[in-house]
Length: 401
Image (cartoon, rainbow, N blue to C red; front, side, top):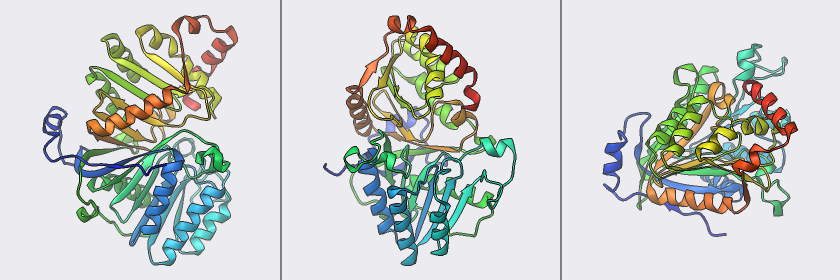
């Protein structure tokens, strides 16, 4: 397969979009001057991430919800250890629940080889930094971030586990997206990492900022990094979704693996569809968390009635968290439209403002639609009573799923 190509923006071509959307280069807004590459599935993401690790000269920051100790996880662990051996500063954050099945000896070995390791909110009482509270148990670090030398950053739905390896490599073949960014917007990922690192009083590490020299020619894109980070910045990604849906004029395509939208998001989807926007939602037919699938189906009726089209992926697990609206704004990240992402989890998304990049996301969405089945309103209305009961029951439990 040909290597994915980087997308870069011509100077001044986005001036009207910047003014219309309140463009500023300030913190939290769209930052110009970034090379952006769309990475489809682990087939493209894993080699690009490993290459970035192998090329790092100063620092590697890795923040990962699920860091498994299988072939993929150990391959990344070994790459991190080799980087540390050649003098690169390496710091890792992994989530205790997300990586529950991983062999802790893998992380211990990383520490012995000089890598700084933080287990986020341990759930085992004998683990270092364990503190019992329902809030800590619910609050998980669901981010997937890799930053090398402060200038290259990755995020998306892909974790470090064999589930994302291609089927021909005896992996799970999970369908997912990742994005690689080179440029000043990577500072947003760095802030996310350092905020957690400082909060847990970990050993001091260097704070590197993106080097303009890391971006070499071509088209440069404006990128905004949006992060869910504790109570003062709660709902940032959801607000971004609803604001974009409120401005949508033509089409809104959303792929989401755990789709149980709250009232504001549902209202934004309904209003967009009712004013004639082509709203399409792509979700898994076979989920690794079946209760969430049934809880999500409980809201299908109103959405279908308003004209929202819903498609269920019929193949392996569909894990993407990607959206594109009106062929100009797109987002890729870790955020699910469910209660956990909305209320508890630490999340991060990268938003890109560029028509050519958005067209690539739309093409990927269209490619996925070929392996889906559309939910028809009439058929859904006459679904079995057993399904209705499951949907009702799990929807009532949506806040703990």
